[in-house]
Image (cartoon, rainbow, N blue to C red; front, side, top):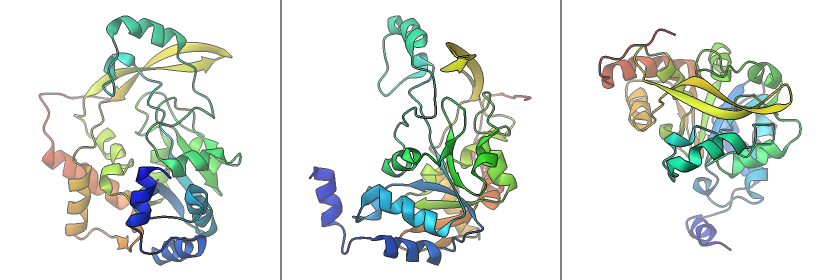
Length: 271
């Protein structure tokens, strides 16, 4: 058993099971008619019998449509890499040889629940090479079918469809700092800085390196944003498993909060 697993066991009074997870999700108000954008940390839930598989099965038992961020940040412009950075002399080779994005491209730092979710052949995935979304259930195909290369978390992304369809955001063992939909709020500010990104993709069956415009996203203040949302009367349902918030309400609040709390140096973008 890994040391991290030992720590989880030591901190867990009683293990979660499919039934206990299902009951907790129902207590959070998740129902079959819901579209649910899920963010999760398996280790923060406590010890779960069956691990990520049990979490995914419990989610499927209560929600009609499940969506998870499935970001593959390794397929990106190497000059921006910081964890770790690589020598500039490597950049051309990385751009020339990076495997192209596909349905099975590995996620990076997204957690075991997302990794297991993607193993299901009935789960579909949007086509963005860096910030894709995986979806299962009634509305899965509709949610992932539109995902433009430019501004991957903005108005031409699955987040826009989730916003329009009034999805619920489910935070399992994580806080607002992990809430991907708040990047939608960033994308709807006129002053969010731009970067020129790149990724390896397939075009007519051939691997090519494509460049595109992207926002310079920053989630460092999302936890504060979320706490202010709750303090100022935002709708939220909580229990020991996590919290559920309405995506549209949270994102609209996020736009106003970011306008108030962020400052940029004379930067404007008309997109």
